[in-house]
Amino acid sequence: MTTARPYADPEKAARWILEIANAVEPVQGRIHIEKVNEPFLFRDGGSPAEYGAGIRLAIERGWLVMHESGTYVIFTPADAELFA
Image (tube, rainbow, N blue to C red):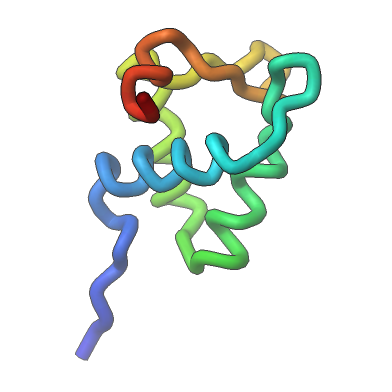
């Protein structure tokens, strides 16, 4: 028997990552990545693979932009539509 993984679907993982990021108070418009990955991985029980797939999908869809250093993300105008 196995239990269902709620974030096994990259679409669900990406949307949950956006929900987490939306709840974080940005610092100079930036959301530090540890403020997103810590809750996803440790509080909500997502796996590193699920997190990776979700964050990649959010970036591919233009919802988030990750800085080249990988230390923070910012919302895009496309993402603002999701929370309007």
